[in-house]
Amino acid sequence: MATSAYERVEKHEGIASEAQLVRVAVQLNAHRLGGPLSTAELALIRKASAPLPRTVIEEMRASIKKGRDPLGAALYSLRPGPIRRTLGAVYTPAVLIRPMVKWVLEQKPETVIDAGTGSGRFSLEVARRSPGTSIIAVDSDPLATLMTRAMLAAIGHRRATVLNQDFTRVALAPTSGRTAFIGNPPYVRHHQLSPTLKAWAQTTGRKLNLTVSGLAGLHAYFFLATAVLGRPDDVGCFVTSAEWLDVNYGAIIRQLLLDGLGGQSIHVLDSTIEAFDDTATTAAITCFRVGTRARSIRLRTVKAVEDIGTLSEGKPVARERLQEARRWTPLVRTRRDIPSGYIELGELCRVHRGQVTGRNAVWITTGNEHGLPEHVLYATITKARELFKAGAVLESLIGLRRVIDLPEDLDELDDEDRRIVDRFLRKAKEQGANIGYVAESRRAWWAVGLRKAAPILATYMARRPPAFVRNLAGARHVNIAHGLYPRIELPAQALDRLADELRGSITVAQGRTYAGGLTKFEPKEMERLPVPDLPQLIAAP
Image 1 (cartoon, helix red, strand yellow):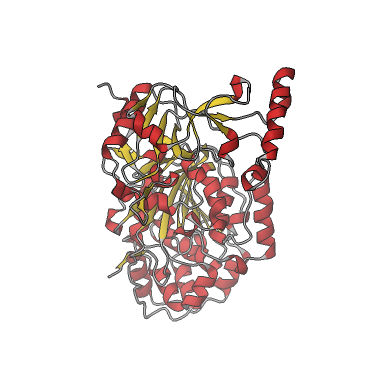
Image 2 (spheres, rainbow, N blue to C red):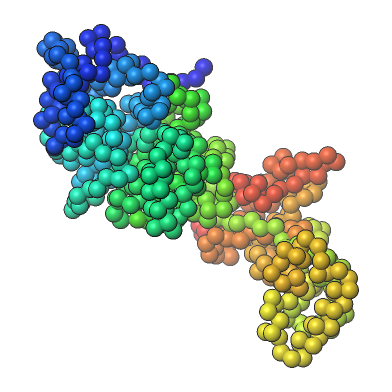
């Protein structure tokens, strides 16, 4: 059975219309808190119904002081689901608000900006926990801002400014200390957004050297607006649908979290958790620090709402790995099986398959029958059995065949070498080395483009576990093997231990088995293998 995080809506028989809800807000002194009222807010007040009995108002005030949201609950029951969804008004349950506010306040902000405040649930929780913190609540719905004013007035909070404005276009007065952005950005799909708003997103994206998809929804725009409004070292915590982790339009959010909104952590709620009432979506809580370039982001899956805990948890995933991934959800989900003290290999190393020559008979030579310059010949692993034979360490290049890897610019060669190479290339053309998909995809058909020598080489297809070999000899490799390239400089001792660990712990069951018993490890699959974390690898023996 699905777990619901939403506290079911309380019924308030005394509130039968939005006009009555506006009157309740006024009776709670909404008009006396948060600064000047907007024209739209004043228009609602002028149309408000007659006053409600004092007992109803005092019930509301008492409920608000206990941290509840009777005004939002009333509006929820008054507005049909389709209308709420058109406005992107999906109210956040307290079980999500509490850890988000806790994380934000731990960053010691001077001001908290409630972006898309709705009925003011985030603002109320901030005010209750930290009365001395200034609050700026922003929402384009005048009824929402009136409810927020009323909620804060009911608990006597006075350090608040409430703005009935579009968050993507709001102008904020400068503050001296850190600002924190928090909220549940409205989920409004792209086809419901105005051409003016879409034009703003495109222009703003270009200013940040980022591309904004025309399919991006309003919640993506909130991240973009925060990148513009925030100053270095400001922080933020948003809860949204998790689909941006994977879809093309979500690239703008992923790019911002890597550059500009330095991602701190992402917490994806398990799909069985109904985070938002009446909305079937997987939720993600994202914490970030403005103006920073994330070196890694902590990712985790939350299996039950009671497990949310602190938003500083999660396993770090390296920036490079996040940049390479087109979808981030697999990076979150695969972490479930990583034991304590271990990380995924991909966090330490990129795994690259060796280069394709396109025509081995031309580009691979046993000796040097063409008389080519020695500096264009590279001793190379060209057969998997060479790695199996090497055992733990490849210490010598003797016996390895060599790959002819010419420079893209042949003018780099001296005159004598150029004559020899030109003679070889004429023969290579006769063998068709300049035609075919591989040759035609290169910038220069004669340049194989071998990668530099990887410190660890691995086989990836066999009827046995992969061989992981320390490449002390500096051999290159073609596409029959993978190379493990550390993302950061690792001492030789750490590389030795890493190779030893992989040899001793990886089984064929962790690969992809094909008919006939062959087991294959694609580069990304190999990157998901568990290995000891860096402190264990570099610890003294």
